[in-house]
Amino acid sequence: MVPIEYYLLLSSAIFCIGLFGVLTRRNALYFLMSVELMMNAAIINLVAFSFQVGNLTGQTFGLFVIALAAAEVAVGIGIILVLYRNFGDIDVMDANTMRW
Amino acid sequence: MTDGSRSRSSLAPGLAAVALFGVLAAAILGSAGGFGEPAGFPAGESVVHNIGYALFDIDLGEIAAEGFLAAFLIIALALDVALDAAIYLAKREDGGSIVSALTDGGRDIVDGDIHTVGDDPTANTVDRDVDTDPDNGGTH
Image 1 (spheres, chains in turn blue, cyan):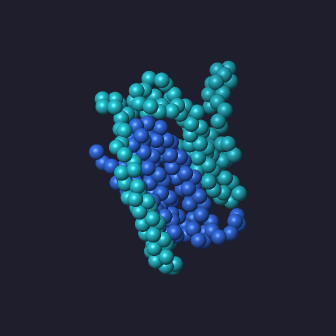
Image 2 (spheres, rainbow over the protein chains, first blue to last red):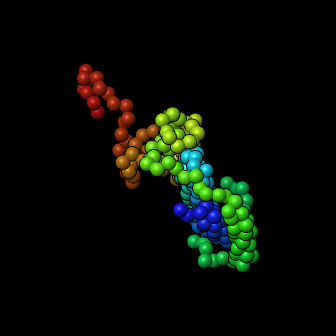
Image 3 (cartoon, rainbow over the protein chains, first blue to last red):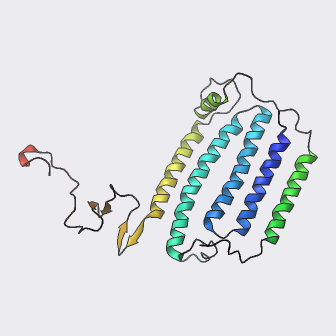
């Protein structure tokens, strides 16, 4: 049986990779992928602790987080589409004003 | 396209991410053994079935879990809202008329009528109200 510490280390590593992506990437698609990585790190934590305490609430909650991630991607892709239409690029640094 | 064109130095964010990982790893490994043995799930019990019971708040599961029926319905609404938002964001305006992301078989919907792309909208407009009265000559 794999100790929970390994899952937590994996989750921390994935979270930090996602954080690095959020801090460095300017392409909105990579940005979105990095946010997804951070969210997946949270899901790994939920599932790991669900097994640790022997309660299925964590796994069920993980399913909801996956559904929320799907909703987030749907809206995110729409925003990226509008970003490209308005600025001709999907550089997140271009949209520095709230102009229409 | 961007990226690859990273004008900012990625050294500081990289160091910050590595430092955060170091802190987290130290905290996790520092508490090693503090978590104890995992309780796990009963052998022979289907986890998937029990997740289904938890999702629909049915008291048939052998593994402990809370009921998530309300959350299930709320997340269904959230996904629906996200779908609508994505469609709204995807539509664009061409010359004052809204071109929707949703089309009918590849035909644009303009002012509630359907017309073939590239054709004269007035000539190829398909009337959407269908006359089913046989006295009036049937459908058109």
